[in-house]
Length: 97
Image 1 (cartoon, one colour):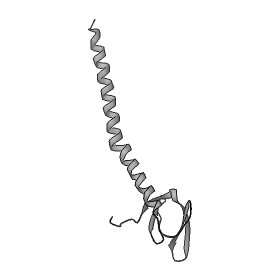
Image 2 (cartoon, helix red, strand yellow):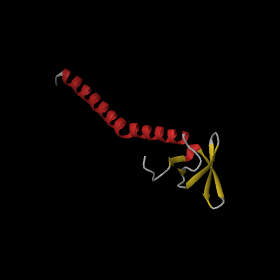
Image 3 (cartoon, one colour):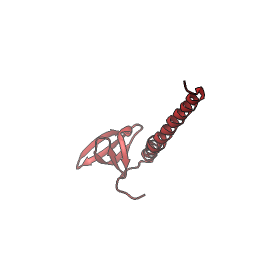
């Protein structure tokens, strides 16, 4: 039979290890993802006519008209596409800040 207090320290060590894993997960995965989402949300809120946008489907469009929850954009030539603001993943790609 072993020392009963040895089990307590192993349990605490296990709890500390799980906490460390959670912190690593938070700082390397969740936090950067939330920062990027907030940055994109801010850029979409500041859209103006003539901006280039990239959609989640990979289309690169030029903004023509902005509405409440969608954007009318030019695809090329006379082609116009209405895109929901939630589908926009980048604003002004390849533009230095």
